[in-house]
Image: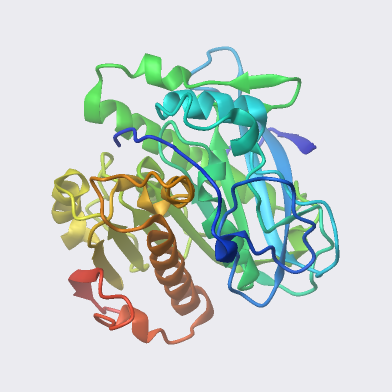
Length: 388
């Protein structure tokens, strides 16, 4: 059940989604989780903490929705957090309605059933008791047409390592997202932006930046929307996004000084980084070796004015920074265009994202970010700078 909160504060290419039985290693549940009967599972988190999850419905009544005139802007947010390791109900992956529309959008109808995808096993326990402490906050924004659930393995990994993580669904920008009242909203923005090209994607990125700042308002303000908001260390906030979510991360950082560090996972910078940069804050470009984001990354590299890295993952594709290839591998139907396995792509994503935030939100040295690693030979350091 989602907690509904209203506020008046202002603040790539499609790929098939096939899924089949998980390997024993991938299927191992985290401590405290009672597994569901399902042939599919996300990779188990590697951190020392159990993971809890809750869902928020946030409404900004001061801002009209850009894709639905006459309606206030709505967001669905999943909160992942370090939890007390006790038995409990596993957090569902996504609803059957969301699964059905996602399968259709990914061109995988007949490859997997909505019921099976919906029942994918996760590590988080629904509404688990929170572990005491104060933790850095990381906000994650998904790719265009994708929903927040496609970043679940990364969110659970970070939470298991001692982060609070908020994954955000932006209304009318995904194939399907459930909202309160029995509503499943689809991608109205896809229709509105048809034929607009890069200008349309820039519009998405700038709108999402307002969404993401609003989420920070509701999580860290004087009257927070989440019952466990006390867990959040307001002085240590990071942000990451996949595809257009990565562009939105940079746009948010340019406007919102609360975000101390950011990651763009294979997203083109349709809305450029401002000429004035990001006020010296660190930024990681982590992507596939593709010309699609590379052109804009080359353009904006000089104005990224703090610690920065540009890392390419050899053999990866655009979706390899999400759950999709992990589940495709479990189906025994990997994408033949990208030789990197889904499980390996997930491990690389988790390792480098966690290392980045450990370094820049916790101040822990991370040799993994200093240069090529024998344990991660797929990762190529294209460009580096260590201004801070």
